[in-house]
Length: 419
Image (tube, rainbow, N blue to C red; front, side, top):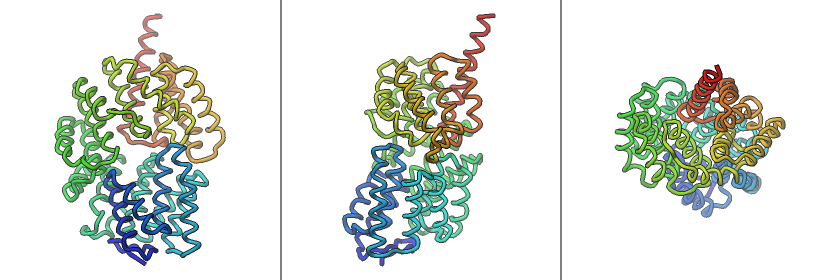
């Protein structure tokens, strides 16, 4: 039996496996690129490392890409086999059960609740807290994100590894629940203690944007630049925030340059990278920038390949945007029909999100981008009050508010012309 630096028991005889698992957890907290390699090293040192297999399975599910998600049941099976062969702690069994809720049952809410129950038993369980945080983000449940962290953090010693990262997570949840000033204060404190906390630093960027302090936001992200080295593809999202600050200041050329050099410097299969790029391109076009067909077609190539995934409603909205903006009507029609079938199935958490709000929002995006302004505005206006359930942040969902507003104005203009 080994223990992590916060005292959590790990069923393994291998100190190397425990050390590498901890490095993988810290990489997850810090949005570092090395996380996958450190987790692989932990599993190589001990192929029966239950927490390692569970962590791998959650990462596969969070990818929101069906080919990768298909690996999660295998990770789950390895965790179960290890528990059967060697036994494990109640925490390790609970991690496995939480993964099973999502990987087998498609129940994200149950998975998150299972992880939060682990943290209630051990508030210093950084892995359970961060995984729950990520799932709640995908579900758009900011109050639950905040509640879990506010319950746990008072039980942490600030000297414990990971404490600053947990503060960064709470800072993000504070901004998402309407307290940007408190979010900024806590986020700055977290980053001062751990400059590599990219999630906490990005929470500060959210808070500054929410307060309309765009120049300070740019200054903050310029300060952050040296600390981006070694970051995961989340660094692209940080640059997306920089581009939004430039756009808000009327600096469209700088925003477009960031798109080409940082946000979408090369094609990516990661759904979050595509979301960043698609959102930024639409905003640039709305600001009067001719982004050109080539940029949209490149995104649409990937969106069309991912159109049948139906793994995260928020990603689906961006895939629809790409197909509509690139003029791929047949592919768009197929995707909308597939979303409708999935919504009707109520097969999993995301099917239920599609039924409740995602399908209407997707149809609204398609109509608005295709020039059916009145229909797009109507559908998006109805969806927006509930759109948080599709996931993402306020800053990301603002895209669809702007899209609704643009469509409504175009519909009014068309009405005036007819009159």
